[in-house]
Length: 185
Image (cartoon, rainbow, N blue to C red; front, side, top):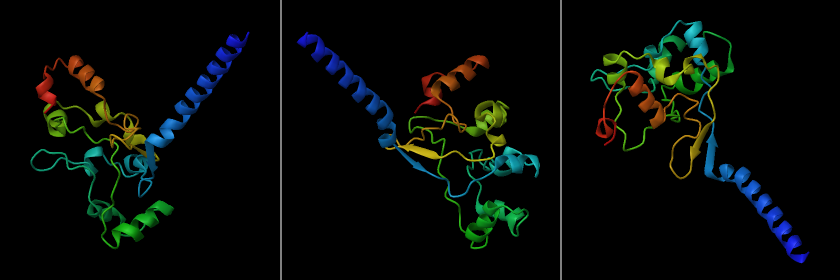
């Protein structure tokens, strides 16, 4: 009887500690931070008829230019075009003083990965949506949740980055054989 009671108390304690760890560990592991501005991709796609490449262009050497400079925003937003608080903040805090926005990356590549947007977008003629999904339809940016150990973003898969399995599946679908060193340094 005493052994059964000890076993039940141990099992209950173990279950409680496991649940507490399961629910508490992510809160300790990830640091959450908002982007400097809540960017609305949908408005720019639907109302301004912009394509991904209008802002996220390839550089002259074929490398990905990444996040656009504030000069791109200023081309249209030197004065307010709408009435949103975000646009007013953009103009007051970044466009008028010509300060760059420091966006937090959802899709930082691991240091051992070699990836070329030019190779995939230009040579393979893949659309942005084929890899990044419907990110261009988002009206609100997700909270950036950085893993304190790896430095990678927790929600990167939701925000348009890919896992190695995604890349391998796409290579199989398109009959591309790159081998390990084709993608890894």
